[in-house]
Image (cartoon, rainbow, N blue to C red):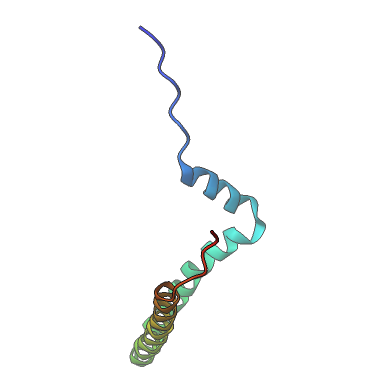
Length: 87
């Protein structure tokens, strides 16, 4: 029986390897977990803060959606305009 070629490496493996070689990338991945744990403790200790956190999340999500819509509209406008093509 002939030996099959080794399976090619997953493309994400190279990306993850590159991220892990950078010292701050591990910290950046841990920060959201720490933030969620801190918010959970804050809500458990002071439950009246929950509506404020929900309101802040809605405001941030709304702002992000508006920024994304503006970006997409600009991208669409650039794609609709004829570009000079080299001949």
